[in-house]
Length: 297
Image (cartoon, rainbow, N blue to C red):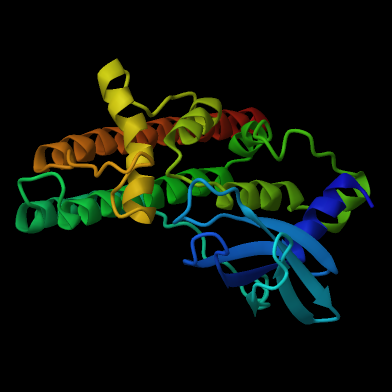
């Protein structure tokens, strides 16, 4: 089987499973959704306990005996591990295309977010309200980045060609017979790879934008850029750790002023990407126009 066929088979055979168990070390519940191979009789996955940072991840052995699923901890087989399998195929329906007006939707969402900051935020920087507003802001930006980047890639072969430099794609090779069987295989591989990205990892997204749209979206100002990069870990702490960092310190600087500043920087980043994509689209339009004129001659 060619490398591409293996890659596509791997994607299409994946199954979402949820494993749940009690951490043998700290006795807190652990639950995590995993994407595993649906046709592999035995596989090993690392699952960490969020409540016990000092302990290494637990190795969960997942077994599939002709559709009968089971799981156990490699380090402690006596621990009961429950497994919930979602075997519905993501290819049973047509996935919706990214929103055609992602930037317009982003601006509307930001307007509502700013009103919520005005109505619900507290002056102090340690409140759960402010943390929720902060993570909501990240969700707005992530949704825009996803729709804008995937949408631009799906409609432009030149952008897809640049996407082939991304990890997970740059080493893939496609046989001619595979292309004959599935002419859109490159487009689908690009789409699948992009959909697997975590768009809150703004450093990686910045690199994609520079490679594919010739424009960095992170702020050019060093202090602003540092503020954005620090906000990534802060988002993780607010989403997964009740606003507490790895040292056990509560983030107390998510003030109204901080929210306003981060919101302003996110708006500038979104506008930068929007302009960059529009420029790529304009270049493609004029290239197509020149080609048609040449063909007419």
